[in-house]
Amino acid sequence: MRLEILPVPGIGHVSEGDDLAALIATAAPWLRDGDVLVVTSKIVSKAEGRLVDVPADGPERLAARDEVLAAETARVVATRGATRIVQTHHGFVMASAGIDASNVDKTRLVLLPEDPDASARALRAALRDRYHVDVAVIISDTMGRPWRNGLTDVALGVAGMDAIRDHRGEVDPYGNELQLTQMAVVDELAGAGELIKGKCDQMPVAVVRGYLSAPRPDDGAGAATLVRDAAMDLFSLGTAEAKAAGLAAAATLPDAANPTPPDPDAVRRAIAAVADVVAPGTEFALVTDEAVRAGLVAAVPGWPADATALVLGSPADPADLVRFGADLHRLRSALAAEGVASLPLPPPAGSPAAACLAL
Image 1 (tube, rainbow, N blue to C red):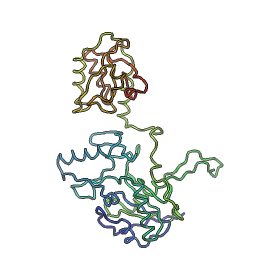
Image 2: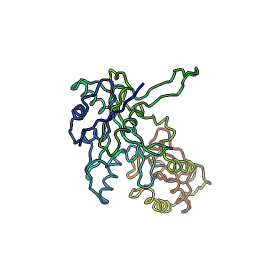
Image 3: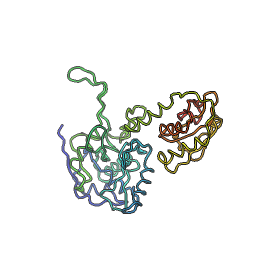
């Protein structure tokens, strides 16, 4: 195999509503069947109108960006200072949900394409139907990587080729059958294209020639196949977040029995002592254990959907239940300072509380 990586100069500034197929076909009339077109996601987002207006600077800009980030976030993976590593609604784990403020007016932010696989399919179809060239299309963006410094481009969307080259079942030159090898070839091609495109050269499109003899006749399953299922993800949280989860699990160990129901005022003081640190502005409530067992936990106003259930009292005489946020260890410490014991009391199976951690 002999590969060539070719730049596509002359794309120019891309605005909302621009015809990417026409821009690319005009800039690269030399495209031919079997080429792999690597397109930076930013120009796809711009053409599709995935732009958000924000203040140019100041605290208002930061507040607006935080609001946009929250809307693009499906799950927070790790937080370090101002850095947020999150899982997007697409399933990608990225810093700041891939929101970009470079190569765009200061009063706008660029979001990822809403459906990168669909964007790749549409661009491929337009080039094939209107310009009679059959290429594979990769929509790429830059990501960091666990355990390694530096960034690289990866594929967010793909059409016309498989995202993964599956070698399982093949036999190596030594006669060993391959058991696990699955190569994310579209990520490798996206990284190859980035060698030509760069970040400051206004070269948002590259062509990799020689990898495919011909694209798939159909579009394929897309880059969605690269998103690892949560059940198979061994690193679904950042280190500090995993430690916090471990502390919460450790907090489920029984304390000494406390047959005296806790003083509600003491519980409220403990909550007040940590509420503004753990979840500023969130209101927390006490409810009876009967309400939990009746399945009313999810209906209590002010409780986060992923809050934790904390039962206060003794196993024989449970008193109140507190639902709190992620930092359960801090809350237990505050309760202990007020002389309030928290004890394990599993919620009934199938109730809304069953998805919570009952202590």
